[in-house]
Length: 60
Ligand SMILES: [Zn+2]
Image (cartoon, rainbow, N blue to C red):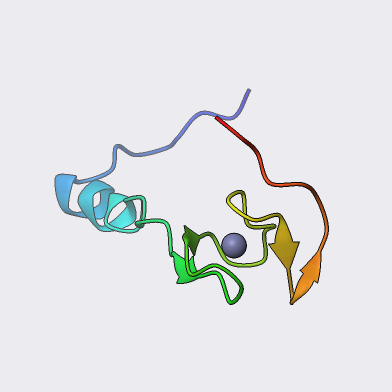
């Protein structure tokens, strides 16, 4: 197994980890019913995607 030759300084480790944070999920409005949904997904509230009915709305 490969073994690192030198230990990383704290600064190098922190610089690498500066890109690891998770971003918030983006939400857009459903064009049919206005509910907040993730982009490029079928709307759970009304079952529409790109202006067409794909599935039946889920009733909870
Ligand atoms: Zn909808």
